[in-house]
Every structure is written in structure tokens, then in C-alpha cells.
Image (cartoon, one colour):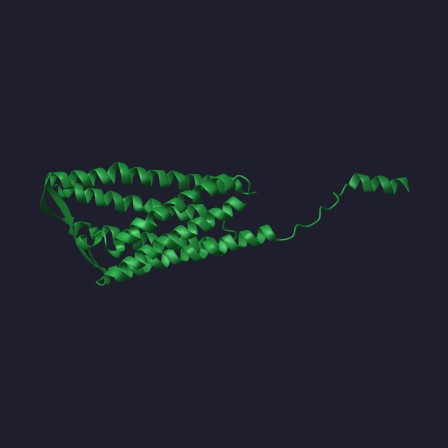
Amino acid sequence: MRRVEAGLWAMLLSMVLGEIISLGSLASTGGKLSSVYATSPFSTATILVSILDPLAIVLEIAAIVLIVSGGKHLSDGKCVRRLSLVAAAFFLVWATLNLGVYVPLIFAGIRGGSLELVRLGLGVKAAVALLQYTIPFLLAYGLARNDRDKLCLWIALTLTIIGGLGIIALPIPSVKLRRITTPNGELYVPVYEINYNSWPYPALLALSHAGGILYVITYALIAARSETKDNSPSKPPTRPHNPHLVLGRRASR
């Protein structure tokens, strides 16, 4: 059970770091994000992503490993282990599609000046984000001990999907390419400007962050209940009742 608890706290911390990255980037840009700012090595968004994002991913991997390995020791470990294995598969698919499809498509679009490839790559990234949003749900659902926690997980998943996918997918049609000349030849840089203060971004951001915060709160409650259960005093073993022995004693009298 200790491994499972550690996995819950690791996933919770990973989600907290994700919220810090998102909110910090929004605050530093005043709700307006452009390709020039996002690619600047000294921008707050770039610094937050480069420092905190790898740590969040490492914590997520640790959470998956801990819950998968610790789930088999639980009384209802079959369900927990099955769901956590699905979460592990989702993570592997997410990482594979990002590195093996999204990155090559973007690189090919930049090299060849193909806006269609760039937008296709961004579409792949938006689609596989659905897997990332589902991983916290899968890791915690089998560990939820009451209907309220399960309902909160469902609500968090729904809010995160609606808000997160909208934020990622909505700007894709507005992305353009700008040609630049480098010592190695010509390249085409994606250009975009996103005003998160204009509709419907405020609503999508509210949904996304509400889902993320609800995930964090629910994780904290589930983990705290798990610790309380582990620390509760165990009852002394009772002597097994044997009706045949009792009847035998009575008959001997």
C-alpha cells in the first residue's frame, strides 16, 4: 500500500507542476501568447517548461510504476493493477506519437514549407493529449473508496478534456508559416498569436483549470484516506468459531 500512496502523491505533484506551468505562462504574457514569445529562450513560459515539465513527466512515470507494482498487494488489486496498466499503455502511446509522429511532421513541415504537415502535426498533438488527460483518472479510479470520489474523478476528466482539447485545437487553423533564411538554407517558422482573453478561451481555461484543481483535491483525499487506513490499529485476531467443537463440549457434559 505504501507504494500506491507514494504513487498518488507523485501524480498529484506532477499535476500541481502542470498547473504552475500553465498559470505562470498565462500570467507572464497577460493572456496573450505569440510564437515569438514562446520560442524566446528567456521568456517565462520557456523557462517554466524547460525546468518544470521534465520533472512533471518524471513524477508521472514514477506514479505509474509505483501504482502498477503496488496494486497487486491490495485486496482489490486486480482492478487497480488493470487500470494502472491501461494508464501505462496510454503514456507509452502518448510518448510514441509525440516523438514518432508529431515531431517528424513539424520538422518536415518546417523544412519543406508545408503548412498542411505542420497543422497535421499539431492535430496529432491535440488528439494524443486526450490520453494524458485520462491517465490521472485511470490511476486513481480503482483506489476511490466511495461514490463521491469517483464522481469527482469523472467530473475532473470531463472538464479537463473539454477545456484542454479546446485550448490546444482551437488555434490550429490560425497557424501560418513564415520563411526565414539561415546559413543552412531556408526554413519556415510557424507563426501564431493567441489571445486567451477573447472568447471562448476564458471559458475553456476555466474548465481546464477547474478540472486540474479537482483532480488534485480528489487525489489528496484518496491518498489521505489510504494513509488513515494504513495507520488505523488492527483488531486482535479472534478465535475462530467452530460449531462442531461447541456441540461436542455440550454433548460431553
